[in-house]
Length: 259
Image (spheres, rainbow, N blue to C red):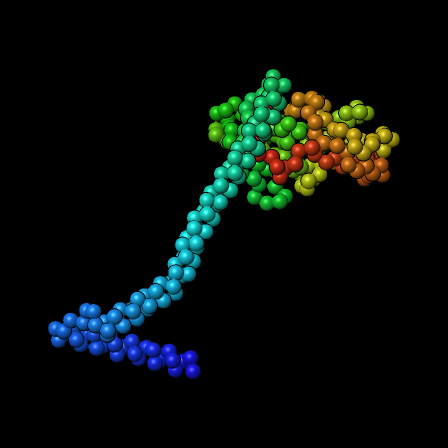
C-alpha cells in the first residue's frame, strides 16, 4: 500500500511540473495561482526532504575528515615523542661515556657503531673512527659496563672491532677476588671461557673477571664479566670456567677506544 502511495505521489509531482513548464513556455504566468502555490509547496517539501537525507552523509564526511586530521596529529605527536626519547637515551649514554673517558688518561676517541657482522658467528662491529682519528690496532674498546673488544683492522675513516665473544679473541685476565690469572677466549656465542686455571684452584660462580694487563694489549683492571659456570673436571689439565660478559653485544651503540 505504501509503495502504491509513493508511486502516486511521484506521478502527481511529475504532472504538476509538466503543466507548470508547459504554461511557462506558452507565456502564461502562474504566479499566485493555486497550481503555482501547490507546486511551490511540493518543491519546498522535496527540497527539505533532500536536505534531510543529505545532512547525515555530509556530517559523516565532515567527521571522517576531522578524524583523519586528528589521527595525523596523533601520529606526528607519537613520532616527536619517540624522537625525544631516543635523543634522551643517546644523551644519557654519551654522558656515561664522557664520565668514563675522564677516568682514562689514554683515551683515544669515542666511536659510534655503524655496522655489525654479516652473520651470527662473526662477532665484529665497524666503528666510525679510524686512523685519521688516532685509532691504533689492538686498542681496547670499552663501555661504562666493561670491556667490549679490541680494534683489529683500521682504515683512515673507520675501524673494525673484534668483540670479546668472537672465537678469535683472547685477553689476559685475572679473577678479582682470588687473583688467579688466565686467558679469556671467545666462543662464538654470548659467553666466553676462562682458560688455564688448574683443578685445585677454588673458583666461585659470581666472581668478577678483570683484565690483568699482562698481555700488554689491554690496560689492567677493566671489568670483563663474571663466572657463570665452573666444571673442575673440565678438559685436559684445567677447569672449564664459563664467563658471562658484562657488556651485552646487542645493546652496544658507542664505545670508548683506549690504549
